[in-house]
Amino acid sequence: MNNDIIKTEMMVNDQKINVLRINNNDYISLTDLARYADNEEPRLPIRDWMRNKDVISFLGLWEQLNNEYFKGGEFATFKNEAGSNKFKMSPQKWIRETNAIGIISKSGRYDGGTFAHPDIAFEFASWLSPEFRLYVIQEFQRLKKNEAYKNKLDWNANRVLTKVNYLVHTDAIKSFIVPTLTEKQKRFVYAEEADVLNVALFGMTAKEWRGKNPSVADKGNIRDYTDLLHLVILNNLENINAELIGIGMSQRERLIKLNSMAKRQMDLLSNNKSFDNLQYIENKINNNITLVE
Image (cartoon, rainbow, N blue to C red; front, side, top):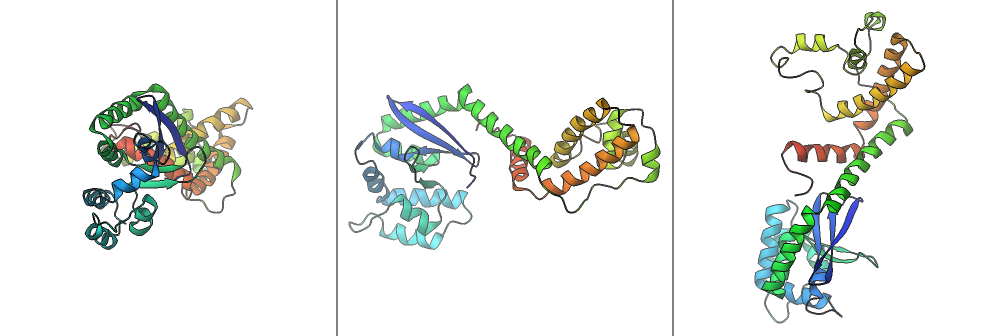
């Protein structure tokens, strides 16, 4: 799982319930929910709940719908044994034997315990008390609308972008895939500074791109139809270009330097895990799924 974990909490009947957001998914603490039934030994209500045949069937179905690596054979064995007096199940055993992702077990003094996807957590809360389940759902929905929680998500997204930009300035580069400038491009005087950046990164001016893409030229420009990787690099080049203009570097020198920097950044970011996290965020947005689901 992603090491970037957003921690928050909600209050249900004056009881603190911890919530973790991992890989853009929320997990509600079953350990905290179980304190509703047994404040001293919250692990016991969880284990009692997981002995139930209907619960095992529900957990297995959830995994089958959401987890392509779920071990169906092991699940079938547990399903057949569930409900008998000798059947025992714990979150750790369920995760270990079936490769489940709907329930997670975390160690730690302050944020350790058993956590579960909201679908599963609500089922557990219902088993504890139907009334308690309604309170949990109500507070969870309120949490999702809370501005402080949204700000945590925004901060996390910005932190990913910061990591990406940090790598641009610190890591060594070995190979380049940005177009190499021709001698004609190096000598040409560009009327717009935007085209200096376009040529440095894309190897063509905005006009040249429109000529090569007449079917979409009336709907946008080269930057509208590029990918996230190029946009991140373009943002960096804009800042660098402003600094180079400030020190009086000629357009030709800036173009050559920007092109070299674009090559270095392209090679680094196209093979970097931090950028993959940023790409994941973009895909969520493009699919009309907001960061606060």
